[in-house]
Length: 230
Image (cartoon, rainbow, N blue to C red; front, side, top):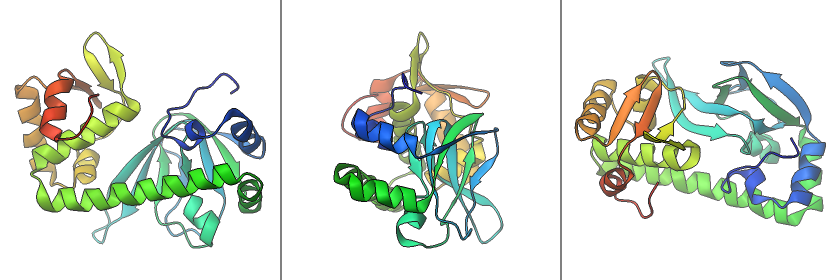
């Protein structure tokens, strides 16, 4: 995808064109279907996957058998890097949310690429640090903030990363069930429904079939109590 552009915060978005082209060249291009698992929790494997043109969700199994949604990954993101770097089993399952194109990069090729391109290695370290910071902040949010604020923060981040502007506002066109959104917010589904209803009643968001539209970015940002605006 020579003309593809990636969001700045993603791995491909952080690389310069030369490094990006080198990385994509060593990847094996694969098409995957919606709901296809591309990495499975617990698997003993060590390749890396670059999401070329894709949207995926990251989940982990809970003790009661349900799947908890940890994060969303999009075109330009990298997944599976921890297993590739330290040889441990997969810590989560990654599932395509829509028909997608991925690049499979074997561990040795990925490690060789990082050795030959130290700037890219620093970006991988930065991404790992960002994800750890995100996870730590999530734990603080779960302990310190009510569900409505946690929901506002999650919607803010999703709007910033995946939102598309149209006359209605900022459309978050990520297909998540309310149960998945609840686990991402660390809340019971009934609590999530109440919080989402409150945002709708206030005119901050509108919802459709697996679609959320941020109608009032200013109000959402104020409720989320975060710097910046969507």
